Image (cartoon, rainbow, N blue to C red; front, side, top):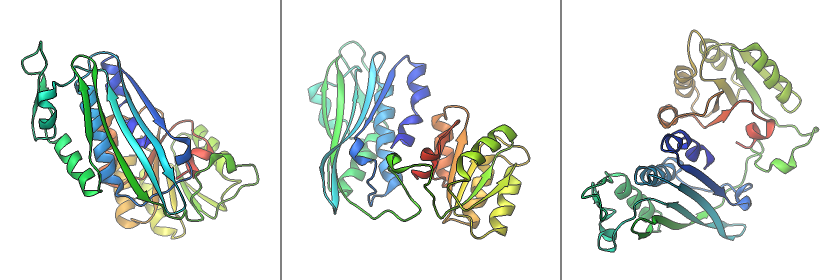
Length: 284
């Protein structure tokens, strides 16, 4: 979920808004059965809409555990803003395609497009419903509960950062692709004690070649900005040849919404900001 919200940091800052994210600590060890892309689309649409209709203040995204057991988890999701608000008579129309948002001072502030209508249809298909509360010139809150089936973690996936220690190891083979030698040495030193094998590459072309050559690779870490073939093109080729492999991109900059969207279309699994820790890598 942090991957979804990080894409909006720049957009919020462009409007001098604060973007706060609260993810319940109880979710650290929880893996659920959910259509990740559709769920991400819902949160993406709600946060994007909140930023669009907020001129000052903040946007808050939260995911709070309501109930947790061995079989399932119930989570309450909220996206709140301090924006212009919506008149009570218009609340039922918000989930209509291209509904125009109005307030008392602005005849037409802007349209919601298809985003909220699509989001509602996705959540309805998940046996829930997005509810909306709003006050003119105070802000709006979108919220919905989801009860999701839990699934077992595979041996290669560890999500509890507290379980890491110097003796920890994973049966994973990593391909590390980085053209900056200092960053390469840092990452290799960070990871080599915890995995049996690390292959190295310095550009996207080498990454694709090594994926084809070494069938034991199951995790790829690569920089987005590299010579000969950049990370974007490399991810496309890697996922085409090995759709099962986990690909984590990393960058020195906060990724924009456009970069996240582009990576999503290529099928990447997550993105990290440099410098990263071994816990950041192995939580995937």
